[in-house]
Amino acid sequence: MKKMLLDEYQQPNISYIKSSTEAISKYLKKNTIVVLESTTYPGTTEEFIKPILEQSSSLKCGKDFYLGFSLKRVDPGNLIYKTKTLQKLFVLLEKVLENTYRDINIGLINELTMLCNKVGISICEWF
Image (cartoon, rainbow, N blue to C red):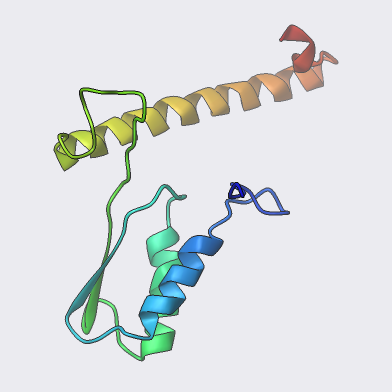
C-alpha cells in the first residue's frame, strides 16, 4: 500500500511522524536526544513534535531533553554517492539549494498566474 503524501486538505501527511512521536514519548527520559530525520515541511520539529513530547512526558525541551532535525537525502539512482558516503554538511547544503530552487520557481509561477488572471489569460493554456 502506497503512503499518501498529502491528506484530504492537500497538506503534507505527517501521520507517520505523529504516530512515531507519540510512541517514543512514552519512553522519553531526562537527557535524551530526539532527532527527526525525515522529509517534512519546515517547522515540524518545533511546532509539531516538541509539543507532543513535552505534553506526553512532562519534560521540558532544552532543559530535560533535546530535540533536533537532520535532513534525509536519498538519491536512489546514484550508484556512486549514497547517503552513507556523503558528509552531512554537503547533504544539508544540497537540500537548501534544491528547496530554494523549487521555492523560487513556485513563486514565479504563482506570480505569473496572478498576472495572467488579471489580463484574462489562462496560464494552463501555455503548457
